[in-house]
Amino acid sequence: MRPVLQWFSRSLGSTTLDAVDVQVRRTRLPFLMVASLIAALFLAPATNARERHETSWVATWAASPQRAGAPVIFNRQTVRQILHVSLGGHRLRVRLSNAYGDQPLVIGSARVALPGGGAAIVAGSDRQLRFNGSSAITIPAGALVISDPVDLQLPSLGDLVVSLYLPENVSMITEHTESVQTTYVSGTGDYTAAPTFPATTLNAFYVVTGVDVTAPPQARAVVTLGDSLTVGFGSTPDANRRWTDLLAERLQSGPGTKHVAVVNAGVVGNRLLHDFVGTSALARLDRDVLVQSGAQYMIVLEGNADLLIPPLINNPSEVVTIGQILQAYRQLIDRGHALGLSVYGATLNPVEGYPFPGLWTAELEQKRQDINRWIRTSGAFDAVIDFDQVLRDPTNPARLLSRYDSGDHVHPNDLGYQAMADAVNLSLFRGVDQD
Image (tube, rainbow, N blue to C red; front, side, top):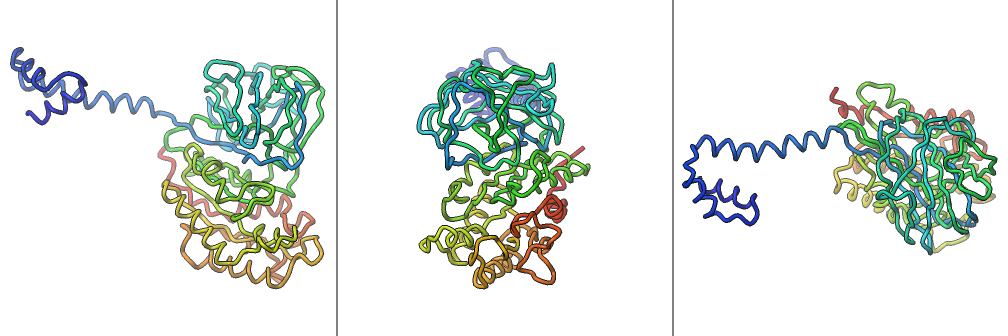
């Protein structure tokens, strides 16, 4: 009995063991009553835990932040962005980032809504975002913030409109380049609640880097770490034909995978080992992948840019060996496994014919083939997704199949991205749903 009383004493904080013991003797509580009291102490937290975990936060959309090559100037303007989510929910929160800013970034107002086409929103769907109760927030240089939760019925595979008013003159250093999605910029003024407004357009995401939704506790996210193929470069703008979007559609169509979200952590020109347009994959892994809410799976499609970019920018000091690339893969795998993620490796797509004279060489192709052989046969990844096999021309494996070619012989078109999505074995994600 005394060990139980010791635990009981600790649970009461400052109450001493002797005081508990004396109180039990003084009141002559029957043993069963004491046991019932102790059992209640054990059972009550479990019941509350079940209530708290009827739903959980899961990432449904992301855009990895990058340092802008040529910063855009916003001067007391509203930026309205359309985000195509994978998993829906009735409650959401939004992540805003000033990751590369060298000055605090003031957000004067932020609102979410459902899209009405172009720069318009659906009447009655508009909701104000707050940050610890305030409608405005200043994001320190290098920091990110998360909004308070807001109620909005967001359908799976639907679009979310995020409108931000930037009340100061800002040279926007943090962006997500090549969004394959139109962003709308107002004239001077706060138009965050406006049904629509005359706008100029850009092809990048600004400040907004993530959306989480409430979902059943069994919901999980697969995060895709990659370069311009994962961004969806070459697909039809505003059509959501990235391979990650198409994979989300396939997952939503299956009863065993309908609670799996797909989060795109692609960056144009991304390399494993060196920065270029964006921070290297090894350096941004924690920020862009490992901390995503509900992350359970990671798909890695990285490596071609490590081979292509050094000769493209005439920088022989950044030429990498196969051994260095494989070591980088193992680092991604080990760090993912350390947090309980399943890590799937994707083979590198063909790149012969990339429209820069002298860029492609037989030596580079041999490196790509050797890397793909290791991905397929090493057993280092938890599973392999063979994009190379479905994209290559059977008569010339160094080249992209012509019907999948967007025109630059590297990036697929919509049909090619569909082939990539179809190449993913959905059994890799089954077993998530329990209903």
